[in-house]
Picture 1: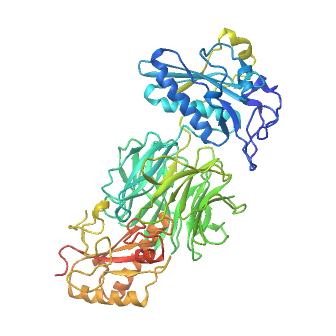
Picture 2 (picture 1 turned 120 degrees about the vertical axis):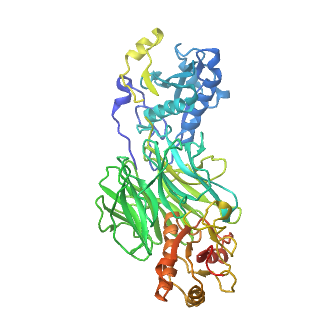
Length: 442
Length: 173
């Protein structure tokens, strides 16, 4: 469905690559196309990054593994296992013996080196088209605190992913979610934040009061959530480090966190008044809020289009939950979901091309996508209870949560490609729900 | 974190020279235990029904809970009969109450919080229509987060779709 551009921007003078018999790769240059068709993952060899100093060996090994995990986790790449390698890379600057890598049918090769000193780490890498015996783009280096080695690895993997797919990456990003523990009837719920792959997970609230539905800002600096610390649900804002907590749009009414506006300075919330719930746009600086919908229905789960011009939300004004789109100034929404069942929790893709949603029909819960005009509906998952999709920074992957039934059941976070392939559980070390995915970090 | 281009080593100078240069960017007046329990909701209410409902008003046999159909907030005849008894008790006993609305797990999170609020509002509206002052009643919602039954079929879900009348400490007896 999606065809990346063929601009040779990343490849420049190396564009004279040979076509090769590889089903999922564009004729030339070496590139994976993210399409509807069945993907044969591209074989890629990622030999251990070379430590520039003996002290960097451990970090080099860890970074190599995260780069491998990021790329293989996309389902678009298959690692040629290390045991199969004929050659080794012991000097980052020595010429590559392409024959060694061609013989094991690696289409792409990543070579890297890692240096570490004084609490800083440096990672350098090059990406090679093995059959063309040529580099794919220039070598790059990233510097950062040694403690942020995972981010350095994600940066490398994002660059490789980007060069081989023509899409921007999504690995150097964070996810806010609710960490859950304890018995089902009395579950402890804490706002938490983790890397996209479940690493570096930290709880940000103490669990003394209930929380729901966090939303992370695009730059991952702030988190909006629904909290019960004043006994009734209200909207709170905290820094990603856990500090700076304050209440937004304080009111006697029950108010729920929605999501950030693209500018980060405003957020959509829903406020219940009597039996109704309406959507408001709250200014995070002043705390003032402007009402956008005026119905006697439950209007909830609002999300901006990436250009900020429109808002998608769910409403049961027609009798059951359906998805509506309105202008950013508010007003009557235009219903876009017309299939069987109930539709909820819409989320606008950062690419603008699709809206993801939860669909409830026939006693099953699905994650699906449709175009902003409601056409092209496609269901990606099905289970006892799937809900709450959130988009990867590049709009190619969705994260959501799936609950298993019964007393011992609970929620876990999953990712799935927008094509419906590559369903994977994100390791969270315990029950986790309501993920919200940031943009790509700077 | 910053990314910069690597300077090509001599051995690769020719190859790198052929590359395009492409930088990358790189507690509000209530006290006492309550419906929240270990989950940490300090609701400050006296709950007699254990985990958020299914009990009785203090010192009575009057049920504290009414139940709803799937995705509904309409009061059934059975529910209004329970509420009529609660109203009788409230007319004899001063003090404040909180109506807590709940939903089953077969719905999305945010909607179910609002559905709980709508159920609580339905109970409050009924009580007000029968003469209980609005000022005595506060409403709250816990969505699907505080079930009283945890199995995965209708026998449990139907118990969780409820509104519970919680009496503030000091009210009543």
